[in-house]
Amino acid sequence: MKILVTGAEGFIGKNLVVRLDELPNFEAIKFVRGDSEEKLRSQLANADAIIHLAGENRPKDPNDFKIGNAQFTHMLCNLLIELKLKLPILFTSSSQAIETNDYGISKSLAEKSIESYSKLSGSSACIYRLPGVFGKWCKPNYNSVVATFCYNIAHDLPIRVDDPNKLLSLVFIDDVIDSFVKWLDKPLKGGLSRITINPEYKINLGELSKLIKGFPKSRKSLTSQRVGTGLLRALYSTYISYLPPSKFKYTIPHHPDKRGVFVEMLKTIDSGQFSFFTAHPGITRGGHYHHTKTEKFLVIKGNACFRFRHLLTDEVFNIDTCGETPTIVETIPGWIHDITNNGDDDLIVMLWANEIFDHDRPDTIASEIENEKT
Image (tube, rainbow, N blue to C red; front, side):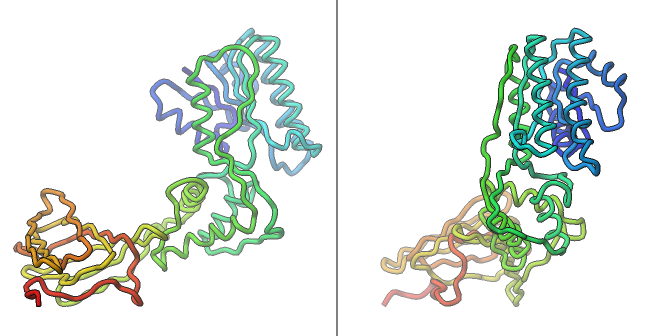
């Protein structure tokens, strides 16, 4: 299926073309700013569907709103009628189409052209009234406050918040593209439809700036925000995309001693922390127990013996593991435990603890496996 994408070099267009190129059933035909009407006519003849993204949203001359949005869309629809093509068309309008500003009026007029084409041709047409769209490759200091905040903060530049209580409506670029592909995948029958992106996020300007400012701080505290789902996931992905190559890496503290090295890698707000340590041949680490804390150990390289002793019953047992056979060993509250490198090379072990280490309440009580119960 050949998809003509107008505005293919814009923010949404770049993301869409990349996604279409990933899918085996689609081929993107790109129409970009500066291309001629004759080229558009030729591309329409080879297309199976259209995703119409081209338009103006921040021109120097307000008259360009009418030219780039209303008149261009009208010309596109007239070409389809003239060529007697019944191509499904998806049009990205704006939530401002209900407003009386120049941009909103131009988008409303463009919608009317799409509606008229659908009625005259009987073709499938879909209109998206998009709120603020954000994500990778969005142009900062242009028309997206998210892009501006993320870019500036990633480059150690100041941001300005005039009204922290201003409420924003936002959708993430990946959700937008997913919705477009879903529309292309379904049988495209005649008639006009309107689709909204889900989820749509609501957040005020002050809270948005606070969240994005927290991202670089996590490199120093090692504590990540909850960036696995929802708006924080999308914002973090966007922020990271604006990092310059010089910031693709950062160093973290490490704690060497005669046994090896211990490194805390990442901490979470409510799901513990990740670390790793090394141990030289013959070295034993640990020798303590916990009342509440639990841990998971994974030997990445080398050979290790985990030893356990129950505090009350003195029951003892050992577990041998090696890097060639990935095995999780869990520490259990009330059991003394240690780990010995019983191989010939340095031991490397990954560690997850279910809580961040608290120096005031470490819940780590020194005790030896060999101690007899008294």
